[in-house]
Length: 263
Image (cartoon, rainbow, N blue to C red; front, side, top):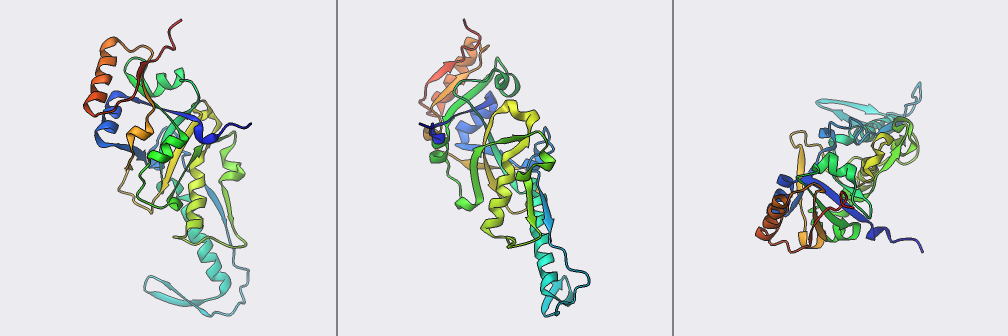
């Protein structure tokens, strides 16, 4: 029998200040993909556009406004305009996508402790995909977000998964749920050099908001968290500090010290 993907264990590694922030606010941080400087290909996407036949001899029967200028265009020209606008959203996906990243795996990852939590002062939260989805309190409908594992590609630029063809057939319109879904999919593809992360994430789509580096989303922490771990080199005072924070904010979940360095 195939394992239920909704029961897949996920881990969130962080430093102690981030853990305090989560408990004090009841919210998780979703940075904008464009601000994740460690990977300039976050939210990378490409799109083909519809080209007007040359010469375009179609009847000019559609009124087109661009600023104060008004002109008559053909159906083919309108198709080109629509495909260009939708393609621009795809190519600007990193400015529209906000991500919250976790690590897949039944057991802890020493690499993640080293990179994201620090061995001595880090904290890891253990959860599952189904717990995450039950705990989320997104303020938008389901067409604005998605969750799932990240796929890794040796050559992301040529991967079919990040290419959209708006040169033929039905073109999703700006503002439509179908276009949002296409853009959301781009948040789940990365280069294979990041494969060690075995990442699982939630991705939210927002209209263009250049002034916002990220958003906070509310979660039911009792539903989200099944256990809390202190790092494998955490001293007793670190475990005491984590326990005190949990007690202060009423999180009654098991606290464990990672035993990755114990025989």
